[in-house]
Image (cartoon, rainbow, N blue to C red; front, side):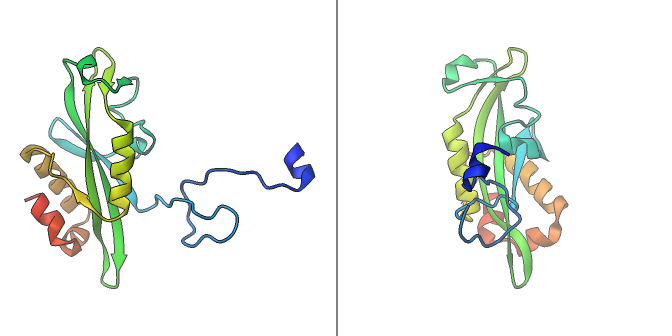
Length: 167
């Protein structure tokens, strides 16, 4: 038994992922990420990569990141898209989607990203916003293909704002 348990104090822990929908009392204010998925768009191909939730996607592993873009002169552009799934009386749909840019040089094991932007964009997706203007036509097509093939019913029930952004 540790010191805190002997004193009757509760351990303070950051609860990020939770299955509970309503929190009361101790631990209130936890963030529920159950309805959020990270999508990596690399070389025109979009894939769901849950590792990106903790900055450990396949493309991010073994890469040393910098906040200075000049540190990655030979990098390739990779997009992280946060996709939030929402539910209403008709069923589930894609409720929010935001894109974040990264540059990665796999050979040099160097990369550029702004972590604060990634966190803010994740928050915007959770708040049901769409921010996909920076994606190029090939990346938009890849994301649209992934979303429609993953669940066409969700795509059909999604807001027109998403469909127009990926048209």
